[in-house]
Amino acid sequence: MRNTKSNKKVKTTKTMVKKQSTKVKDYVVGFTNEIYKVIQVGRTFAMLTTQNQPVTKLAGVSKQKMKQALDENKAIQAYVSKTGKISYKLVEMDEFKKHSSTINDEACDSVQESFETHDALKEFIHTKGKDLKPNGLFIEELKWKYLLRSAVRGKNILMTGPTGCGKSQTAMAVAKALGRELFYVNLGATQDPRGTLIGNTHFSKDAGTYFNESAFVKAIQKPNTVILLDEVSRAHPEAWNILMTVLDPGQRYLRLDEAVDSPTIKVAEGVSFVGTANIGNEYTAVRVMDRALLDRFVIAEIPFLTPTEESSLITQLFPAIEPKAANNLADIAGLTRVEIKSDSSRIQTPISTRSVLEMAGLIVDGFTLTECAEVSIYPLYSQDGGLQSERTFVKQLVQKFVNDGTADNLMGENLNTEANPNDPAF
Image (cartoon, rainbow, N blue to C red; front, side, top):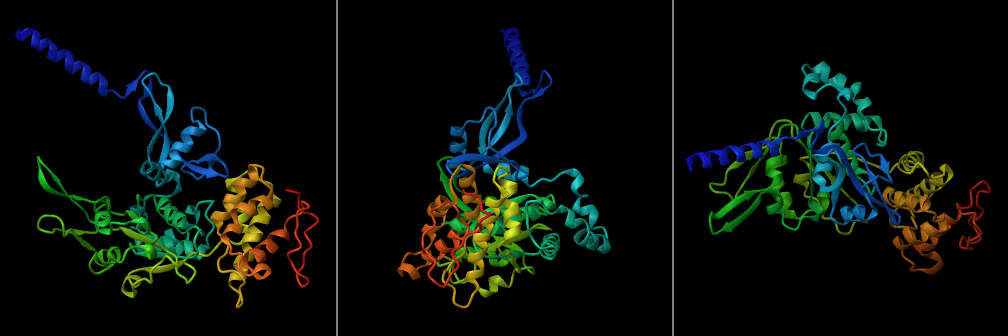
């Protein structure tokens, strides 16, 4: 009986070792670095690589799986089975962010090596840093250098600007350029600030009452991490109170009040906090930020793209779109942004880059410019006031770029109603 039991144990051990093997027939079993984020383009779906390149079709990934990933806020990652067959599985979005936070080894030397001397730091910011800016990110060279310098110095950066102008994407680009891990928290969507930033107390029959610290607590203890605090201006005031000591350069700690003995967690060296905020009267859901909180940040204003930059972005994300169509979309949005800055603006909000990209996707899917405007732009503007309404004004702008025979007489006698004869018929 002893020998029998011994043999069984040996057999079981062999089986377990076999299961732990990750390489079978020259195939590495498990998830690969091939991972995608799903986006909706018009009425269909596409995927973005970690390099922000669009992919519309992929063998083994159905439209239904893309829709499921989008609905569940999941990413799609390649998986190699023991037979070497590749399939695609849904994974947490954090996996995509983890992969997109890495950069090619040849992009730059490690940050630590670059900053052995002050001169090396200055060279990195003013010379090498320029080459780290992603091709799809349109930002002034001065602001890019300022953001890099602030991040490597461990500063707290607050990016302000209109909605849809690319603040969050810029913050992610900075982390990616430096090869640093990015931790994302949407403060505007947080209903439980203490649970999100500190943690929660739980109870179980076996362990009794115990404290479970938040992912944020773990993140601030990782050196050189970039922590993105999205929608700071929409956060609950309790979140601001918690962040006061965390963001203060002279304190940099977080007290876990709910934990036993209320331990104090120090923010690790090199951790940089990057916040995004919409500041202005047109954002009715935002709160007036506490001055003491604002003083803990350096401010970086992120404006809308110029029409030329926006047109270039459209063609990068939608290679199939006609250049003239991309230019028209960018010009229409640009005119609304010029109007909003005038002393007697006839609209209260401009067209965002996010809306422009949505219309670009519709055009690629066969919609006309008139149809795109009808479903994507006009609903954003009020009809109150008839011919003097915001919607009428925006229709006037759109009609200047339409040459498909659908133009309405909306301009009035004192406005130019002629369309460009070179415009394509969408």
